[in-house]
Amino acid sequence: MIADRITEKLNILADAAKYDVSCASSGSKRKNENKGLGNASNGICHSYTEDGRCVSLLKILLTNHCIFDCAYCVSRKNNDIKRAAFTVQEVVDLTINFYRRNYIEGLFLSSGIFKDADYTMERLVRIAKKLRTEHNFNGYIHLKSIPGASDELMREAGMYADRLSVNLEMPTEAGLKLLAPDKNRQDMIDPMNFLKNEIILRTEEKKLFKKAPLFAPAGQSTQVIIGATPESDQQVLQSANYFYKNFNLKRVYYSGYVPVLADKRLPALNTTVPMVRENRLYQADWLMRFYGFNVNEIVNNEQPLLDLDIDPKLSWAIRNMQAFPIDINKADIQLILRVPGIGMLSAQKIVSARKFAKLSLDQLKKIGVAINRARYFIVCKSNEFERRDLTGQNIKQFILAESQSKYIRNTQSQLSLF
Ligand code: SF4
Image (cartoon, rainbow, N blue to C red; front, side, top):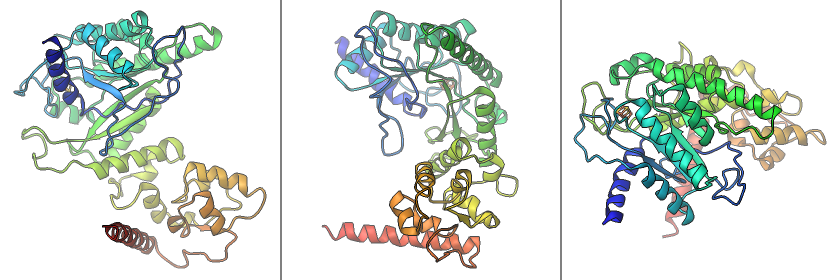
């Protein structure tokens, strides 16, 4: 009977949590000491469902009751759905049981807001504390911070969680006002600011005193919903860039809006989930964080939307043909990283390999460079310079045509198996 009740709660609260995509569990260094349960320093894998959602953690809400009425959220107070709430002990027991059975590597816990922010946050913190102190659980814990929660609770949360995140929800304040009028952007910014300062302070402390306790070792992240409000990619990426720079965020997660609720402020129910846009935003985000691109190079007033047909690096390259060709055998790694078809690993391999001999197209291919894209933008030992007098638009068409025919070839060879 009790098991049935827990199963029912689990169905409701795991289903309600699936719209939150910010659950990748990277970057933690929590070690298993004293023969405790789990180990977040290795073995935490990121499993994603086909639509890109992470599935390796027990991902649930503490409750889907909520005092707020955010238009885009299935848990909003005026939505007529089945409600449920776990007790603190139930979440602890579920986590431990699932972990022992190898179903999960850790816990991703969020919640609707019972009563007020502190009342809810206190329960989330209590769960993490019990897992760490009573069960010696060393698996990964990602807690969603409730906007408006007090500094004391945020500090305590950081003592037990690997990662904390405060969802911005909408890329801009205007979007938030429109769809979540109960919420206040400042209630999100304050805890983010507190976490940023506390993480810096605790990291310094840890350098001085090895035994100083960990504080949110996997840092803080946030999530924005895209497609529910009309912000352009330029607004989305500028906002992400601002939060990366000012709050030391580890990640911004972009969640394509899933239309599940009818509301005149929202896109119609039959609107397609913007999965391609979501993917392009992640690619643009990588360019900003790891490839040295400035946000204005990717999107700007002339080009406020990402090109959905091609990745943002290729899109930048064909708009900036004057920057090419890049000599693979001489150029600085930062320039090589700007070549479409060359990723971080390939760029590093190029720089190491060219010390011994000049590289040709064949060698670049062996290194892992996507020659079909890179060849229009580089010179190397091979004589052919594929760009010739092509314009950026010509190159785009060639690349698209080639990937299209490759797709058809692959489909045909797969079909011939049946
Ligand atoms: S506060 Fe969170 S759970 Fe509540 S309605 Fe808004 S988004 Fe949903």
